[in-house]
Image 1: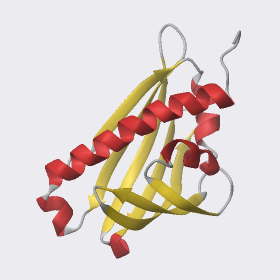
Image 2 (image 1 turned 180 degrees about the horizontal axis):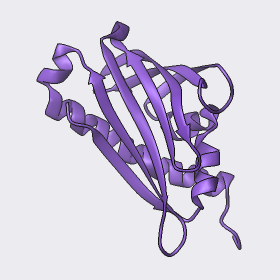
Image 3 (image 1 turned 135 degrees about the horizontal axis):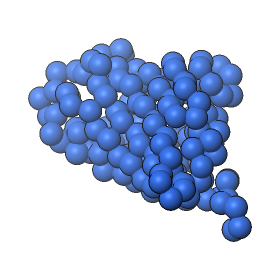
Image 4 (image 1 turned 180 degrees about the vertical axis):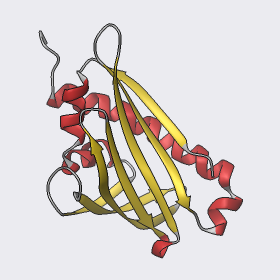
Length: 154
């Protein structure tokens, strides 16, 4: 299945965005519209930090284990996601790049490594659902960044 990307521009610096995203518990604040029942494991930040959550999308609920598997401060965080009893495996990658006039562009790309047959058969619907959910995630992330990390002068 083709990856899905959502992005947003924010006034915070790449380091400020990265520092916020690096803390797994912060993700609950901007994804709780479809990820609930957060159970954290591992360190609070960095590689090995993770959570098991309940994802509710398109009328289905499933537990998903999320673990940070790679970081490159302040540019990138890669999470490995496993659900559907291991039949669904994907990578969620946050990339943060500076904007020419200040601030950052934050993008989240979800790429399937393995997907159940039902997901593959309904790929256009699955991708549209993920795209819509992750656009909301990006808008909510911008709101949480503003609350957590105000831009200088605000």
